[in-house]
Length: 333
Image: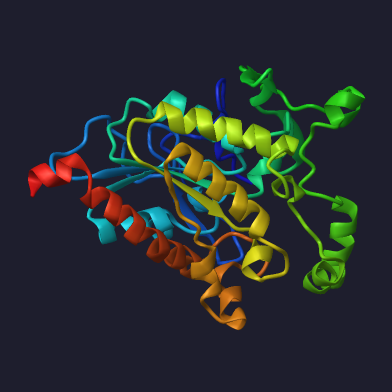
């Protein structure tokens, strides 16, 4: 298995700069191209905008970085031609919103732009509370690595694990309290493996009223309070319009679990921060259930090209309105 990431002392890791590689996948494989900054792009990210060309910066995890599809089939790249704009994709697979905020601080805050999109895969509410996450090493074995993380102390964000240890941990060398902060991939991991193995996942979730992300059930849970603080600090640091875009789990698109918790939390936060909320879930749900299964792969939960297309068509009008109303647009007109 080819190594595609390199250690980074602030964010934890990034894609290997200038990498060009074919990634094995159930689709038959896809081409990954990385720019000199260490993000998936066919071009460098330059600080100055081209005259008359608007620019959007997008942050997120693997659903934005585009795991399972080549660069040109991602929703960000599809939006470029629709909006006649530059869309810089700073997505970084397997990261939490905390690391994505650090990526903005480290790599993007000096880059001229008109709009910022923060695409929060809703599962990230767990990742921000994790201090360690499993990743596959160059040989394909899953290892435990430290990640940068924040804590809330007296209402203030405190950053830890910067720089994180570069070498992986063995579980038996970690103290019990450290083991409790390893992101194990969701609630009830052992049960989930059994259910998935017998092919009864959706039925069990409906029968048991499975709630994969109870952190959104109340504005006062530990996970949401931390996520809210990170997003608040990030949005307040930006001087251009911001779009908050919560990306649903596959279970939400399948209507196998309730989405109202995360929808309520993000709506409250967007109103409080006076930024734009874009919820793409209704766009996915507008299709018949039998059709929605085409939006992700058979084994891989990431978006297929058709899933990216739905997301781009959903987000496009929102960005178009913001770009048309920017001061530069009025001056050019």
